[in-house]
Image (cartoon, rainbow, N blue to C red):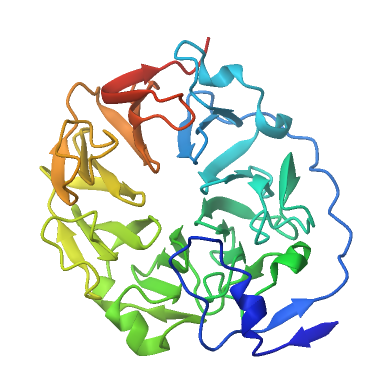
Length: 393
């Protein structure tokens, strides 16, 4: 094994061309060794989950839906083709959690395993693969008790049955909670590591270089690049060691875009980070949490890079932020970001909401899916009003 410290050129190679986040000034360890063998193929699945359950996740190229225990992904290039017409990923039929980064997808099964497919530049598939990309569904190494999986931009995390969290993937800012960052040529070494200190995790969210989690004690902990003053004061420019944020105590069910986080506390949406596109008249990067007013009390909020949507307690959906793609569900001045939260009209009572880079979707009480915005992979399809997406044939 060769351990190389303080080698800035290698860390610089971790950054994608065009990414805004510079490499850290005091790099972490980089480990390069011969590749170990890849894990075995996933075990045979068991019986499926509740057939009425639907969970959505969006990447750059399409929409994925967990329908019962099966996950189907579609480019939405045929308006009449049901989501479930696509083959189930990996033939798995006991998926219980689904997530998508910009160019990779992961699912967790009822058996506790996690499986991913797509881009792997920074080891975000967690499967000890040398390849930069795979279209196969591969098993994340070493995780056998996952209850939920969540993707950041280039890393991912699982909430474990023990209440701990384990993360893997890009880590030059400590966003996986590990002290080791792997060079791209050693991506096959990148496997999950448990995040230290935190337990009783109830939700977790990953941004480009930051991860935050909520716990049963109603605390919020963050690690990686600070997006809140309390985090920066406790850990400096970046750290893999989680920091508690007392100012955010009580915030639940966190969600993240590329560089901002939002959650709900007692029916009110609270956001922190780079908020220039999300909040009206926001000071943007002032290091504090900001309330985001919604028409009525909120149950859940989901955010992408430049917009978000809140699921309200009465089943309505209210969207906010930049409206250039139609993802707010209404016509707005495309030059204006920070649009306030407004109810999406024409949408049946919803039970869940999901957002992507240019589109928003909702799952209704009738187990139907409605989407609006610029459809990813949809050959220029642009819908301001919600449109029903067929789920089954």
